[in-house]
Amino acid sequence: MLKATLIKATEAGAEELRRFFNGEFKISNKEGINNLVTEADHAAEKAIFKVIKDEFPNHFILSEEAGEIKMDSEYKWIIDPIDGTVNFANGIPICCVSIAVEQNGKMILGAVYNPFLNEFFFAEKGKGSTLNDKKISVSNKTEVVKSCLVTGFPYTYLDSENGPLQVFERFIRKGIAVRRLGSAAIDLCWVAAGRFDGFYEHKLQSWDSAAGFLMVEEAGGKITDFDGNYYSVYQPHLLATNGKIHEEMLDVINNKKQL
Image (tube, rainbow, N blue to C red):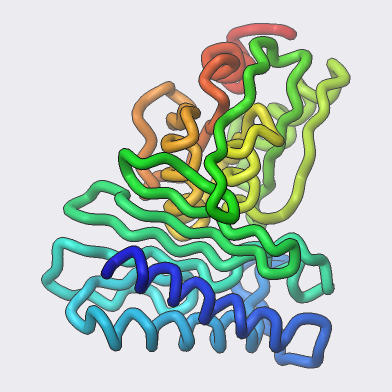
């Protein structure tokens, strides 16, 4: 029942993305430059909520736009109605609906759907990850210098040492391919599918990473914070890799190793 509802909710949100994409819609700005929210975000969120509440009215919901809808439940739905809103608002088809289900603090289900590329990623705890119902797994690269990486940058920069630009520079000055797609959920799914060997970001929210986190783990990858500790979606720093380049990437990110 949970799985079926998750799929239905994800598809309902994606239908709203299709309806608004490349059309006219209202856009407003949250904190920071280009931190957008659109009419489509709210419409997708509303469609997703309806599916979940019809089936599980007493479940806790955490969503990017609505915030927390607190309930005394062992289940929590973590929702990003549009991950990659800036892309969406500019007609760039690298954006998605991302929904995860957490049970008693453990992620058990995740779905990420990009309707414009027709890619539906799904993960279930202990049962692996799939893309359009076909099993996926992480890559086999063993060296960072030969890897294809992806990252993102926060809308507001913290004046701290070892920030996003400094780490980015360490990789690109060595000629390492580092992409920036604009959707953390897709970045994580593409690590899970072996397209990228690693993804790191300094400032993520739980709805950015909850579904993709499970996707990478179930595809055989590894995710930690920047200290190498087990990753929690409720803290900002994330490193997701195929597992084989993880320690080397941690050393580079923390400026303990020169490539």
